[in-house]
Length: 427
Ligand code: PMP
Image 1 (cartoon, helix red, strand yellow):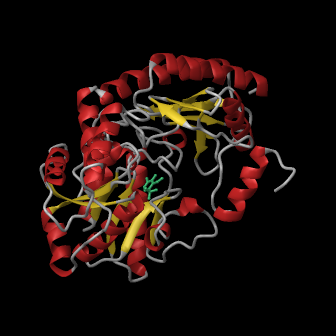
Image 2 (cartoon, rainbow, N blue to C red):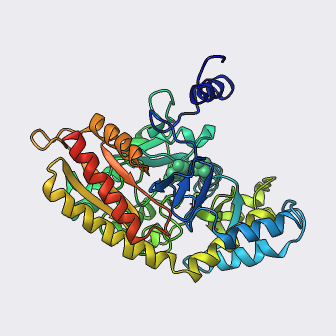
């Protein structure tokens, strides 16, 4: 390591000890040491605009959440084999935000674990094995859920019991056609699985279709698909890891934006503003059937520190009108992007709900995805100290997903960086 500059040395150490799986963002990686609200800072005190982190939804290091964590960590941290009131207080408050039918909640530490459990519960209840997902879905990293996560790529074999729906590409198919299009695909997949002796158990979807390329569509379109799932005897599992907890600005949950009553809801990321905490909320008749046979314990899940963090996060969401901010600032942001699109024909579509926005870049002549160009754009934005990313099967969709405390002046800073970056790249 001698003779290498400090940055290079860190990269080599990282590769040596953590291995190749730990990928970094950017050719010129960012090292941050502190965060506050929608901003993070490097050790020189340079300020970066965070337009990507959806875990710290109520803002980096929100003082109310930090205080709750510190206080509980200094008092007690155990597991769920002893009585503790915070888990009950929090669970009752969270379940009150669900449709009446969903009345039980069980805790995990990651979104992957929640989806893993949801699949086991759905299979147990229906007696089926087939799980339907979308084309570019990501649902997690356990053996079970990674086999239902096509976006991981060629190295990961999909389950033989997976049914795959196309991406609900509202841009290509049309906002009004998307529901029927997806129902047709769903029925075809269920029939195909049946021919192979696989009984349909559940549809597992993230209602904002984030890794597919961000396709929230008009509120309501997905309800017809949920009805079709039920008609076919399956369960609807709402993966709320991305759209949950106020993200869409239109409802607390992504499924609620569509007026769906799911059978199982999984959630994670923003739930405790950065402390490992996830959950699976289930209709009691479905969970009880599972728990009759299989008890469930998860050492760290639902511990007093995690629950104190989650409870404080929910208090901030309610107390500081986080959903209202996502709605207002998200609408303003989308509007600014749409205005910009008029001068940049490479912007083929601007779509999103609340503070989850996708900007699609296609070649204006051929319609081909501008995949490489979007990667360059993300790098340019980083040089402006604006952190953002991309998604979709071709990677040509710019992904904007900031903490929900993002402000109007944050939008202005993003737009200035974007305009300058587009001009620099001739896009
Ligand atoms: N579901 C969705 C929709 C996700 O986006 C993710 C994480 N990106 C997961 C599940 C898995 O969550 P975790 O990384 O906490 O295991």
